[in-house]
Image 1: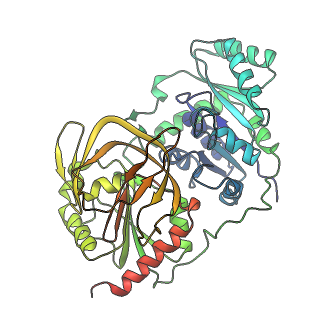
Image 2 (image 1 turned 30 degrees about the horizontal axis):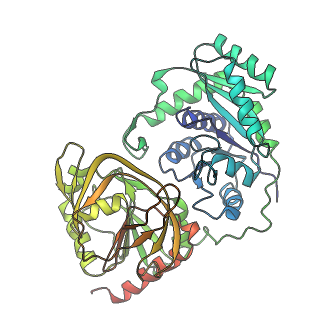
Image 3 (image 1 turned 90 degrees about the horizontal axis):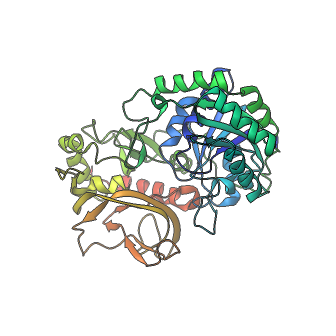
Length: 468
């Protein structure tokens, strides 16, 4: 297939400034008139929003643990269609993946699968020559990866940048492509689950414009484009993916109503495209503002997000909560992940201990805690449902500070979590309440493509049975 110019921006560790550098470079290249296809390694929902804003097109995830590794090259090629180059932001440190002895899903794994050259984003605070040792170690740890260049972040001054550049280029021979000077005004605001999504109010465009301007002043964009152009052609010979685009709705398709607003934004674009390809019409609605469900909706998709931060406003929208309770009672297929589960419980207890009534389709309360639960999970369906068959195994991930307390013992479990090195004990997860399936587990439909077909089939079947 034709060559795809591409680079992957990685770092020795989280917090190095990958998102800022990546978004700034994408914006600077886009300002030159280049069409950039943005990607994010790992299961992240928030960083892709910044890159989509910078590129003016959707950002897609490349996660070789959630998605079959043989499909990663195909996802990259398909989602880069029409672009001049692709820019991929890594996840955590370059070699951080599933476990300490397994880099599956890491930035390095994605780089190997796609033969993508890597640019190291290096936080150079309080170091000079040691930066060269870090780059040498990253280069030599796995020679299957090409370290094509280094971008220096948070340098103290142009003189500091020159000192670090001389050390890296003189001792390691890897080119330094430029720098971004330390300035706390460029720091992105964070909270308990990381950066604040761009779906929420904020000065995101002003921030992006400032980062872009600084990148243009101190980064060699011509060299970045040249390095991207040196990437070898993708080997897509044996990759087969289901169609995900190009299908027009007919007006008679089953309608899946998808929650999307400031409170609910954790959703993979691939999931939506797979649902469309399977025959669904996707219609978005806001649990914060809409008072009714979308017209002709025959299924609900309640994704994750930050309902705990918008609990008061969600609770005040009683009309929509009543509509959702009625839909659940009528047997409408409802699929809820993480924040969606929280919304369906009787109440959310926020970090200050305040209680806000929620939909009440599931007994119990969602209580915010100080303990983060996160990681990849392998789960097995506990029961036959409209989405899963008993005994089916799938991969997902969870990332939350809340717990579901007061869950009814009579509710069947949705999943049994299989033990692994990170969570050695088997655990039970989620719930099946009629046609409502709720869990803390996030699932990428490319890893279980039958999910999209079954989701749409359930929506179509309920349309035939729905009350007049």
